[in-house]
Each structure stands twice: as C-alpha cells, then as structure tokens.
Length: 90
Image (cartoon, rainbow, N blue to C red; front, top):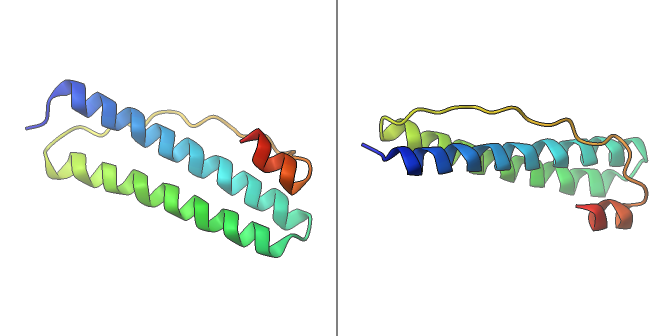
C-alpha cells in the first residue's frame, strides 16, 4: 500500500508531466504552422517523452493499488514568436 502523502505527490507530478506534454504539443503545432518541420518533430518527441513519464507514474500508482487522480491541464498559448523566443519563454 502506498501512503496518501506519496500518492498525492505522484498525482501532482502526473499533472506537471501532462501540462508539459500539452505545452510541447502546442509548441510543435505552432512550429509546424511556421513550416519548421525539424523543430516541430523535435518538440513532438519532447511531448512523447513527457507523456511517457506520466504513464510510468500512473502505472506505478496502479501497481501499488493507489488512486490516480487526474487533474485539469491548462490551455497553453497558441503564439510563441520565433523558435528562440519560444524556448526562452519555457
């Protein structure tokens, strides 16, 4: 059995990972729209990495009979400026 304190911390980290994934996906879509195909691909790779982290944590909780509490994900910006500005902001 997993403690409530650890379970809550893991659920919070799942939200952090999913927020990051959501942001990377938005940045990828923006880059794709600017015809920055390589940059968009790299950002999609980062998106996948963040979702992988979240699923590892989800599975950790499930395997220990913990409760997964999915939290809201904030909508990221749709405008980021240049690729340099995009990375400086986040």
